[in-house]
Every structure is written in C-alpha cells, then in structure tokens.
Image 1 (spheres, rainbow, N blue to C red):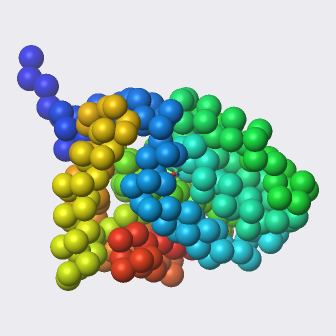
Image 2 (image 1 turned 90 degrees about the vertical axis):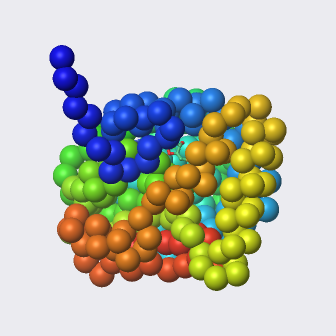
Length: 258
Ligand SMILES: C[S@@+](CC[C@H](N)C(=O)[O-])C[C@H]1O[C@@H](n2cnc3c(N)ncnc32)[C@H](O)[C@@H]1O
C-alpha cells in the first residue's frame, strides 16, 4: 500500500512526517520537561521572559480593563503569560482562560494558581482547560482577546492555528502572538551562537532530557519571518496586523484585529 504524508506546514520535531505526528511529538516533549520547564525558562532566558510577558500584557491593557471581556491564553503551558494578563487586569476581573494540550504543563499552571493568589485578592483565578489549539472547543466569536506566548511556533499547522484564533475571536477582538524570531547583524550572530551551541547543552543538562532543547533553535529557524507571518495573518482574516520586535528582535509581538 502506498502511504502519502501531507507536508508539514508548521513545527516539525525530528522524525515527524506529518502534522499529527508533529503534534504528538511536541506534546510528549513538553510533557517530558514540564517539571523543570519554569526553572529552565528563566535560566536560559536570563529572566527576560518575564519582561516579555509583562510587555505583552500591557499591550492589551484596554481590553483587560473591561470587566466583561473574555480572554483566552493559548498554549499557556505553566501559565506565566496567563498570570501576567491577570496582573495587568488588576481588579477588573475579566474572564481568563488558559488552554494547553499537555496535561503535565497544565497541572503546573493549576498548582501555581493556588500558590499565587492575585495581588489585590479581587481578580479571579484563571480557568485551565486541556485543549488543542488547532481544534478549539469554543464557539465562533467568543473571545475579545486571544494570546499565545512561545506556543504558536510549536503548532503543527500555522495557517490552521491562525484560522482557529480568528474563528473564536469576536468582531473587533484582538490576537497577540509572542514568539521568538531571528535577529539580524551582530546580535543575530551572537544569538545563533548562544541558541545553537550553548542553550541545547545547558538545557539538556538541567532538564535531563535530550531533544527538546535541540528542537528549540530548529523550531525558531523554521518559524516564518515577520513579513511572512503578517501575510499569513492577513490571509487568515486579520486586519491591522503588525509585529513589534522585543530585545533586538530576539522575540516579538504579532498583533491583529478581527
Ligand atoms: C514553549 S511552551 C510556552 C508556554 C507558556 N505560554 C510560556 O510562555 O511559558 C509551549 C506550549 O505550547 C503547548 N502547545 C504546543 N502545541 C499545542 C497545541 N496544538 N495545542 C495546545 N497547546 C499546544 C505545549 O504543550 C507547551 O506547553
């Protein structure tokens, strides 16, 4: 029997031949590093990740100030982007949902939620839901804001991911995708040296798991550059799509409106 695989148009961990095996490999990878994910994140990013989450949350301050807003943080992992959104929302208490397809990552988010009551004690705890970003269990036009921090790059099909976000957003709703990119020039050279040589070794040593930290630089290299992502966002139905580089363009925020 002749089996044909559809080409992967998203993340492709080594050995993944099609979108469903890529998604499975990504889920297994994050599940395997879940216990040490936070520590590794902060060490390997020199804590800059905290600034990026905060800056992203601030970019959506207007929506977060609406008490009746519905907000979804996709690929929430252990919840740091979700917590940054909650902090920015202050006492306004919009409905905040974190979604991820790795049970182990969500377990960490849940326990952090319990040990992290909101600063003012008034904003509600986020809800956590196990869900696949490529097939979201929400009705059309449900959310005012959908964010995703360092998760979108891992989707096995970028266009499908964008279409799903567009589907669940209300008219006028916004999406914010925070992810890595490859800076240019001297910073780019230093970044590649660190990302390709240092980070995989330190990540493997600290996590005790081979694979995920070699996949990270590969996944960034494979992720479309800003011009292409903006084009994909337009095609998925977003308007006013923009990209704001963070920290010399090591990361950046994609924004778009429905
Ligand atoms: C690098 S982590 C980012 C976690 C968190 N947002 C942060 O900023 O630390 C990527 C997360 O995306 C999740 N993920 C990847 N593909 C997904 C999919 N198709 N559906 C839901 N979650 C997904 C992984 O399980 C993982 O928890």
